[in-house]
Length: 445
Image (cartoon, rainbow, N blue to C red; front, side):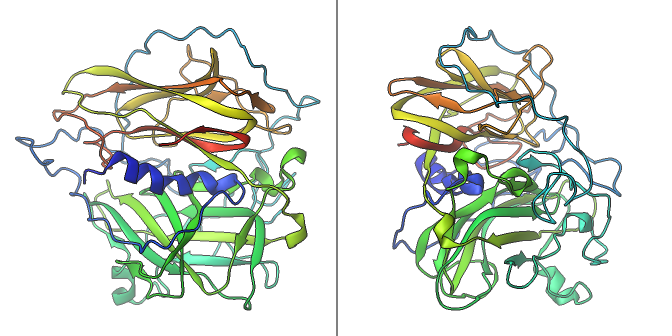
Protein backbone atom coordinates (compact mmCIF):
# COMPACT_ATOMS: atom_id res chain seq x y z
CA UNK A 1 0.00 0.00 0.00
CA UNK A 2 1.35 3.43 -0.94
CA UNK A 3 0.84 5.99 1.79
CA UNK A 4 0.88 9.78 1.74
CA UNK A 5 4.06 10.85 3.54
CA UNK A 6 2.40 13.47 5.73
CA UNK A 7 -0.46 11.16 6.69
CA UNK A 8 1.86 8.31 7.59
CA UNK A 9 4.18 10.54 9.58
CA UNK A 10 1.35 12.14 11.54
CA UNK A 11 0.08 8.69 12.49
CA UNK A 12 3.41 7.11 13.39
CA UNK A 13 4.25 9.96 15.78
CA UNK A 14 2.35 7.95 18.37
CA UNK A 15 5.21 5.46 18.42
CA UNK A 16 7.62 8.07 19.76
CA UNK A 17 5.47 8.31 22.87
CA UNK A 18 6.81 4.96 24.05
CA UNK A 19 9.15 6.59 26.57
CA UNK A 20 7.83 10.13 26.56
CA UNK A 21 5.36 12.33 28.36
CA UNK A 22 1.86 13.29 27.28
CA UNK A 23 2.79 14.76 23.90
CA UNK A 24 -0.34 13.74 21.97
CA UNK A 25 -2.99 16.27 21.01
CA UNK A 26 -6.73 15.90 21.21
CA UNK A 27 -8.76 15.69 18.03
CA UNK A 28 -12.23 14.74 16.89
CA UNK A 29 -11.31 12.85 13.75
CA UNK A 30 -13.00 9.52 13.13
CA UNK A 31 -10.48 6.69 12.80
CA UNK A 32 -10.53 4.84 9.49
CA UNK A 33 -9.08 1.56 8.30
CA UNK A 34 -6.06 1.32 5.97
CA UNK A 35 -6.28 -1.26 3.20
CA UNK A 36 -4.18 -4.42 3.71
CA UNK A 37 -1.05 -4.37 1.57
CA UNK A 38 -0.21 -7.09 -0.89
CA UNK A 39 1.24 -10.36 0.46
CA UNK A 40 5.00 -10.68 0.41
CA UNK A 41 6.04 -11.91 -3.00
CA UNK A 42 3.13 -10.32 -4.91
CA UNK A 43 4.14 -7.80 -7.62
CA UNK A 44 3.73 -4.16 -6.65
CA UNK A 45 1.41 -1.95 -8.67
CA UNK A 46 3.14 -0.85 -11.88
CA UNK A 47 5.85 -3.51 -11.66
CA UNK A 48 6.42 -6.36 -14.09
CA UNK A 49 7.42 -9.92 -13.35
CA UNK A 50 7.83 -11.33 -9.87
CA UNK A 51 9.23 -9.30 -7.03
CA UNK A 52 12.69 -10.33 -5.98
CA UNK A 53 11.88 -10.75 -2.36
CA UNK A 54 15.26 -12.31 -1.79
CA UNK A 55 16.18 -12.59 1.88
CA UNK A 56 13.06 -12.44 4.01
CA UNK A 57 12.77 -10.20 7.08
CA UNK A 58 12.45 -11.80 10.45
CA UNK A 59 12.53 -10.56 14.00
CA UNK A 60 15.39 -11.89 16.11
CA UNK A 61 14.15 -15.22 17.57
CA UNK A 62 13.88 -15.88 21.26
CA UNK A 63 14.31 -19.07 23.25
CA UNK A 64 13.43 -21.84 22.62
CA UNK A 65 13.77 -20.94 18.91
CA UNK A 66 17.45 -21.10 17.94
CA UNK A 67 17.42 -19.84 14.37
CA UNK A 68 15.23 -17.68 12.17
CA UNK A 69 14.01 -18.27 8.64
CA UNK A 70 15.06 -14.85 7.35
CA UNK A 71 18.34 -13.32 6.33
CA UNK A 72 18.83 -9.58 6.17
CA UNK A 73 19.65 -7.91 2.85
CA UNK A 74 23.41 -7.48 2.29
CA UNK A 75 24.88 -4.27 3.61
CA UNK A 76 25.93 -1.58 1.18
CA UNK A 77 29.26 0.25 1.62
CA UNK A 78 28.79 3.23 3.90
CA UNK A 79 28.92 6.62 2.13
CA UNK A 80 31.33 9.29 3.21
CA UNK A 81 30.79 10.37 6.80
CA UNK A 82 30.05 13.86 7.98
CA UNK A 83 32.80 15.41 10.10
CA UNK A 84 32.44 14.35 13.69
CA UNK A 85 33.94 17.31 15.58
CA UNK A 86 31.32 17.96 18.26
CA UNK A 87 29.77 21.40 18.58
CA UNK A 88 27.22 20.54 21.25
CA UNK A 89 28.64 18.29 23.93
CA UNK A 90 26.29 15.89 25.73
CA UNK A 91 26.53 15.92 29.51
CA UNK A 92 27.72 12.42 30.47
CA UNK A 93 26.48 10.51 33.50
CA UNK A 94 28.06 11.81 36.70
CA UNK A 95 29.83 8.51 37.36
CA UNK A 96 30.67 5.58 35.08
CA UNK A 97 27.78 3.13 35.25
CA UNK A 98 28.26 -0.45 36.29
CA UNK A 99 28.58 -3.08 33.59
CA UNK A 100 25.16 -3.92 32.12
CA UNK A 101 23.36 -6.65 33.98
CA UNK A 102 21.91 -9.41 31.85
CA UNK A 103 19.84 -11.24 34.45
CA UNK A 104 16.32 -12.52 34.44
CA UNK A 105 13.36 -10.19 34.09
CA UNK A 106 12.68 -8.34 37.33
CA UNK A 107 16.19 -8.87 38.74
CA UNK A 108 19.13 -6.56 39.35
CA UNK A 109 18.27 -2.87 39.07
CA UNK A 110 14.82 -3.51 37.53
CA UNK A 111 12.10 -1.64 39.46
CA UNK A 112 9.17 -3.73 38.18
CA UNK A 113 8.77 -7.51 37.86
CA UNK A 114 8.43 -7.29 34.04
CA UNK A 115 11.38 -4.90 33.59
CA UNK A 116 14.79 -6.01 32.33
CA UNK A 117 17.96 -5.79 34.39
CA UNK A 118 19.93 -4.24 31.53
CA UNK A 119 19.15 -0.58 30.86
CA UNK A 120 17.97 -0.34 27.23
CA UNK A 121 14.58 0.72 25.85
CA UNK A 122 14.07 -1.83 23.05
CA UNK A 123 14.61 -5.55 22.61
CA UNK A 124 14.36 -8.19 19.90
CA UNK A 125 13.78 -11.02 22.35
CA UNK A 126 12.64 -11.33 25.98
CA UNK A 127 15.13 -10.81 28.80
CA UNK A 128 14.15 -14.08 30.47
CA UNK A 129 14.78 -17.76 29.88
CA UNK A 130 11.23 -18.98 30.47
CA UNK A 131 9.85 -20.35 27.17
CA UNK A 132 6.24 -19.84 28.33
CA UNK A 133 5.99 -17.41 31.29
CA UNK A 134 2.19 -17.17 31.02
CA UNK A 135 1.68 -20.95 30.54
CA UNK A 136 -0.14 -20.31 27.24
CA UNK A 137 0.79 -23.55 25.46
CA UNK A 138 -0.60 -21.96 22.30
CA UNK A 139 1.27 -24.21 19.88
CA UNK A 140 2.49 -21.16 17.91
CA UNK A 141 5.92 -19.46 17.98
CA UNK A 142 6.34 -16.61 20.44
CA UNK A 143 4.79 -17.78 23.72
CA UNK A 144 7.96 -16.51 25.43
CA UNK A 145 6.93 -12.93 24.54
CA UNK A 146 3.86 -13.03 26.81
CA UNK A 147 3.94 -10.65 29.80
CA UNK A 148 2.58 -11.62 33.21
CA UNK A 149 0.07 -8.87 34.12
CA UNK A 150 0.61 -6.39 36.99
CA UNK A 151 -0.96 -7.28 40.35
CA UNK A 152 -4.47 -5.93 40.90
CA UNK A 153 -4.38 -2.28 41.95
CA UNK A 154 -0.81 -1.77 40.71
CA UNK A 155 -1.66 -1.47 37.02
CA UNK A 156 -3.44 -3.20 34.15
CA UNK A 157 -2.69 -5.38 31.16
CA UNK A 158 -4.19 -4.70 27.74
CA UNK A 159 -4.14 -7.84 25.58
CA UNK A 160 -4.77 -8.09 21.85
CA UNK A 161 -4.97 -11.70 20.74
CA UNK A 162 -6.87 -14.94 21.21
CA UNK A 163 -8.81 -15.36 24.45
CA UNK A 164 -8.73 -19.15 24.11
CA UNK A 165 -5.97 -20.93 22.17
CA UNK A 166 -7.98 -24.16 22.00
CA UNK A 167 -10.85 -22.43 20.17
CA UNK A 168 -9.79 -22.41 16.52
CA UNK A 169 -12.60 -20.01 15.56
CA UNK A 170 -11.09 -17.54 18.02
CA UNK A 171 -7.49 -18.23 16.98
CA UNK A 172 -8.26 -17.74 13.27
CA UNK A 173 -9.12 -14.08 13.92
CA UNK A 174 -5.44 -13.44 14.66
CA UNK A 175 -3.71 -15.88 12.28
CA UNK A 176 -1.39 -14.71 9.53
CA UNK A 177 -0.54 -17.26 6.87
CA UNK A 178 2.91 -17.91 5.34
CA UNK A 179 3.94 -15.18 2.90
CA UNK A 180 1.30 -12.68 4.03
CA UNK A 181 1.97 -9.07 5.03
CA UNK A 182 -0.69 -6.67 6.32
CA UNK A 183 -0.90 -3.13 7.62
CA UNK A 184 -4.32 -2.89 9.29
CA UNK A 185 -6.14 -1.12 12.07
CA UNK A 186 -7.35 -3.17 15.01
CA UNK A 187 -9.24 -2.38 18.20
CA UNK A 188 -8.37 -3.55 21.70
CA UNK A 189 -10.39 -2.40 24.72
CA UNK A 190 -8.60 -0.91 27.74
CA UNK A 191 -9.91 -2.40 31.02
CA UNK A 192 -11.76 0.07 33.23
CA UNK A 193 -10.81 0.61 36.86
CA UNK A 194 -13.40 3.24 37.78
CA UNK A 195 -14.58 6.42 36.15
CA UNK A 196 -11.73 8.94 36.48
CA UNK A 197 -8.31 9.27 34.90
CA UNK A 198 -5.41 6.94 35.60
CA UNK A 199 -1.76 8.02 35.43
CA UNK A 200 1.37 6.13 34.44
CA UNK A 201 5.05 6.61 33.74
CA UNK A 202 6.33 3.07 33.13
CA UNK A 203 4.86 0.84 30.42
CA UNK A 204 6.06 -2.29 28.64
CA UNK A 205 4.86 -3.54 25.24
CA UNK A 206 5.63 -7.00 23.86
CA UNK A 207 4.60 -8.42 20.46
CA UNK A 208 4.98 -11.85 18.92
CA UNK A 209 7.60 -12.22 16.15
CA UNK A 210 6.40 -11.06 12.75
CA UNK A 211 5.37 -7.64 14.05
CA UNK A 212 7.03 -4.66 12.37
CA UNK A 213 5.44 -1.61 13.96
CA UNK A 214 2.57 -0.63 16.22
CA UNK A 215 1.19 2.91 15.97
CA UNK A 216 -1.53 3.72 18.47
CA UNK A 217 -4.35 6.15 19.04
CA UNK A 218 -6.86 6.28 21.90
CA UNK A 219 -10.55 6.29 20.94
CA UNK A 220 -13.65 6.72 23.05
CA UNK A 221 -15.74 3.77 24.22
CA UNK A 222 -15.32 0.03 23.82
CA UNK A 223 -15.94 -0.87 20.14
CA UNK A 224 -15.85 -4.53 19.09
CA UNK A 225 -12.31 -5.90 19.37
CA UNK A 226 -10.37 -7.26 16.41
CA UNK A 227 -9.11 -6.18 12.99
CA UNK A 228 -11.29 -3.67 11.17
CA UNK A 229 -12.67 -0.14 11.52
CA UNK A 230 -11.81 1.35 14.89
CA UNK A 231 -14.82 3.61 15.27
CA UNK A 232 -15.14 6.00 18.19
CA UNK A 233 -13.63 9.47 18.38
CA UNK A 234 -9.90 10.01 18.48
CA UNK A 235 -8.52 11.24 21.81
CA UNK A 236 -4.86 11.57 20.82
CA UNK A 237 -1.81 9.33 20.61
CA UNK A 238 -0.89 6.40 22.85
CA UNK A 239 2.53 4.71 23.21
CA UNK A 240 3.39 2.16 20.52
CA UNK A 241 6.58 0.51 19.30
CA UNK A 242 8.63 -0.37 16.24
CA UNK A 243 10.42 -3.19 18.10
CA UNK A 244 9.12 -6.50 19.36
CA UNK A 245 9.63 -5.31 22.94
CA UNK A 246 9.69 -1.75 24.21
CA UNK A 247 10.33 -0.81 27.83
CA UNK A 248 9.86 2.80 28.83
CA UNK A 249 11.62 3.98 30.78
CA UNK A 250 14.23 1.20 30.76
CA UNK A 251 14.23 -0.86 33.96
CA UNK A 252 11.12 1.12 34.92
CA UNK A 253 13.46 3.79 36.29
CA UNK A 254 13.33 7.35 34.91
CA UNK A 255 16.44 9.48 34.95
CA UNK A 256 16.31 12.17 37.69
CA UNK A 257 15.63 14.89 35.12
CA UNK A 258 12.70 12.83 33.75
CA UNK A 259 11.01 12.05 37.06
CA UNK A 260 8.17 14.43 36.22
CA UNK A 261 7.35 12.95 32.79
CA UNK A 262 4.14 10.94 32.66
CA UNK A 263 0.90 10.22 30.81
CA UNK A 264 -2.85 10.16 31.42
CA UNK A 265 -5.11 7.18 30.65
CA UNK A 266 -8.88 7.78 30.93
CA UNK A 267 -11.46 5.07 31.64
CA UNK A 268 -13.93 3.94 28.94
CA UNK A 269 -11.38 4.02 26.11
CA UNK A 270 -9.89 1.63 23.56
CA UNK A 271 -6.65 1.57 21.59
CA UNK A 272 -6.90 1.91 17.82
CA UNK A 273 -3.80 0.07 16.64
CA UNK A 274 -2.13 0.54 13.26
CA UNK A 275 -0.47 -2.88 13.22
CA UNK A 276 2.07 -3.83 10.51
CA UNK A 277 2.74 -7.57 10.56
CA UNK A 278 4.23 -10.21 8.27
CA UNK A 279 4.93 -13.94 8.17
CA UNK A 280 8.07 -15.13 6.39
CA UNK A 281 7.91 -18.65 7.83
CA UNK A 282 6.31 -21.71 6.24
CA UNK A 283 3.71 -22.11 9.01
CA UNK A 284 0.77 -20.03 10.26
CA UNK A 285 1.58 -17.58 13.05
CA UNK A 286 -0.42 -15.54 15.57
CA UNK A 287 -0.44 -11.74 15.70
CA UNK A 288 -0.57 -10.84 19.39
CA UNK A 289 0.33 -7.91 21.65
CA UNK A 290 0.62 -7.44 25.41
CA UNK A 291 0.73 -4.02 27.14
CA UNK A 292 1.60 -3.74 30.85
CA UNK A 293 0.75 -0.32 32.32
CA UNK A 294 1.79 0.53 35.90
CA UNK A 295 0.05 3.31 37.85
CA UNK A 296 1.60 6.32 39.57
CA UNK A 297 -0.07 9.14 41.55
CA UNK A 298 -1.21 12.14 39.51
CA UNK A 299 0.97 14.38 41.67
CA UNK A 300 4.12 12.87 40.13
CA UNK A 301 3.40 14.20 36.62
CA UNK A 302 4.99 17.62 36.14
CA UNK A 303 6.20 17.86 32.54
CA UNK A 304 5.36 17.02 28.91
CA UNK A 305 7.50 16.31 25.89
CA UNK A 306 7.35 17.42 22.26
CA UNK A 307 7.71 15.05 19.27
CA UNK A 308 10.65 14.95 16.88
CA UNK A 309 9.93 14.42 13.16
CA UNK A 310 12.50 14.66 10.37
CA UNK A 311 11.45 13.04 7.08
CA UNK A 312 13.85 12.07 4.32
CA UNK A 313 11.40 11.35 1.52
CA UNK A 314 12.18 8.32 -0.65
CA UNK A 315 10.94 9.09 -4.17
CA UNK A 316 12.39 6.59 -6.66
CA UNK A 317 15.37 4.24 -6.29
CA UNK A 318 15.73 1.87 -9.27
CA UNK A 319 16.75 -1.79 -8.97
CA UNK A 320 20.45 -2.28 -8.27
CA UNK A 321 20.98 1.34 -7.20
CA UNK A 322 22.53 2.60 -3.98
CA UNK A 323 21.42 6.00 -2.73
CA UNK A 324 21.80 8.13 0.40
CA UNK A 325 18.66 10.01 1.40
CA UNK A 326 19.27 13.07 3.58
CA UNK A 327 17.12 15.66 5.32
CA UNK A 328 17.81 18.48 7.77
CA UNK A 329 15.65 20.19 10.37
CA UNK A 330 16.34 23.29 12.48
CA UNK A 331 15.78 23.39 16.24
CA UNK A 332 13.22 25.91 17.43
CA UNK A 333 14.13 27.00 20.94
CA UNK A 334 16.56 25.55 23.45
CA UNK A 335 15.96 22.09 24.88
CA UNK A 336 17.25 18.56 25.24
CA UNK A 337 16.66 15.23 23.56
CA UNK A 338 14.82 12.52 25.50
CA UNK A 339 14.74 9.79 22.85
CA UNK A 340 15.46 9.15 19.15
CA UNK A 341 14.81 6.30 16.75
CA UNK A 342 15.04 5.91 13.00
CA UNK A 343 12.18 4.30 11.07
CA UNK A 344 13.09 2.47 7.85
CA UNK A 345 12.60 -0.81 5.98
CA UNK A 346 14.63 -3.77 4.74
CA UNK A 347 16.84 -2.08 2.15
CA UNK A 348 18.13 0.72 4.38
CA UNK A 349 21.41 -0.62 5.67
CA UNK A 350 22.19 2.41 7.82
CA UNK A 351 20.23 5.19 9.54
CA UNK A 352 22.44 7.96 11.00
CA UNK A 353 21.67 11.27 12.70
CA UNK A 354 23.91 14.26 13.43
CA UNK A 355 23.41 17.25 15.73
CA UNK A 356 25.30 19.87 13.74
CA UNK A 357 28.48 17.86 13.01
CA UNK A 358 28.27 15.39 15.90
CA UNK A 359 27.05 11.85 15.20
CA UNK A 360 24.40 11.20 17.89
CA UNK A 361 22.49 8.16 16.53
CA UNK A 362 23.69 5.32 14.30
CA UNK A 363 21.64 2.21 13.48
CA UNK A 364 22.78 -0.64 11.20
CA UNK A 365 20.07 -3.23 11.83
CA UNK A 366 16.69 -2.64 10.19
CA UNK A 367 15.07 -5.63 11.94
CA UNK A 368 15.72 -4.09 15.35
CA UNK A 369 16.00 -0.36 14.64
CA UNK A 370 17.30 0.68 18.02
CA UNK A 371 15.65 3.24 20.25
CA UNK A 372 18.19 5.31 22.17
CA UNK A 373 17.50 7.43 25.26
CA UNK A 374 19.57 10.47 26.22
CA UNK A 375 19.68 11.06 29.96
CA UNK A 376 21.95 11.17 32.99
CA UNK A 377 21.82 7.45 33.85
CA UNK A 378 21.71 5.67 30.47
CA UNK A 379 25.00 4.56 28.91
CA UNK A 380 24.50 3.85 25.19
CA UNK A 381 27.03 1.89 23.13
CA UNK A 382 29.24 4.45 21.39
CA UNK A 383 28.75 4.95 17.64
CA UNK A 384 31.26 2.92 15.61
CA UNK A 385 30.71 3.42 11.85
CA UNK A 386 33.85 1.45 11.02
CA UNK A 387 32.49 -1.65 12.75
CA UNK A 388 28.95 -0.91 11.50
CA UNK A 389 27.45 -1.42 14.95
CA UNK A 390 24.52 0.39 16.55
CA UNK A 391 25.39 3.27 18.84
CA UNK A 392 24.58 6.71 20.18
CA UNK A 393 26.10 9.38 22.40
CA UNK A 394 25.38 9.06 26.12
CA UNK A 395 24.24 11.51 28.76
CA UNK A 396 21.98 14.54 28.68
CA UNK A 397 22.02 15.85 25.10
CA UNK A 398 21.14 19.56 24.88
CA UNK A 399 20.46 21.59 21.77
CA UNK A 400 19.98 25.30 21.18
CA UNK A 401 17.76 27.29 18.88
CA UNK A 402 19.11 27.21 15.33
CA UNK A 403 21.01 23.93 15.68
CA UNK A 404 20.78 21.60 12.70
CA UNK A 405 19.63 17.99 12.93
CA UNK A 406 20.58 15.97 9.87
CA UNK A 407 19.49 12.42 9.02
CA UNK A 408 20.97 10.09 6.41
CA UNK A 409 19.60 6.75 5.18
CA UNK A 410 21.94 4.59 3.08
CA UNK A 411 19.71 2.48 0.84
CA UNK A 412 20.85 -0.52 -1.18
CA UNK A 413 18.10 -1.61 -3.57
CA UNK A 414 19.11 -5.21 -4.27
CA UNK A 415 15.57 -6.07 -5.40
CA UNK A 416 14.15 -5.97 -8.94
CA UNK A 417 11.53 -3.29 -8.25
CA UNK A 418 11.85 0.48 -7.89
CA UNK A 419 11.69 1.57 -4.25
CA UNK A 420 9.37 4.42 -3.32
CA UNK A 421 7.83 5.78 -0.12
CA UNK A 422 5.55 2.90 0.87
CA UNK A 423 4.65 0.91 3.97
CA UNK A 424 5.99 -2.36 2.56
CA UNK A 425 9.02 -4.07 4.07
CA UNK A 426 10.66 -5.43 0.91
CA UNK A 427 9.20 -3.28 -1.88
CA UNK A 428 8.95 0.15 -0.23
CA UNK A 429 11.24 2.34 1.88
CA UNK A 430 11.03 5.09 4.49
CA UNK A 431 13.57 7.35 6.17
CA UNK A 432 12.01 9.15 9.14
CA UNK A 433 13.57 10.22 12.44
CA UNK A 434 11.17 10.16 15.39
CA UNK A 435 11.74 10.92 19.03
CA UNK A 436 10.98 13.34 21.82
CA UNK A 437 12.42 16.50 23.32
CA UNK A 438 11.86 18.64 26.40
CA UNK A 439 11.94 22.39 25.83
CA UNK A 440 12.57 23.26 22.18
CA UNK A 441 11.05 21.46 19.22
CA UNK A 442 12.55 19.81 16.12
CA UNK A 443 11.02 19.07 12.75
CA UNK A 444 7.40 18.51 11.79
CA UNK A 445 5.42 19.38 8.70
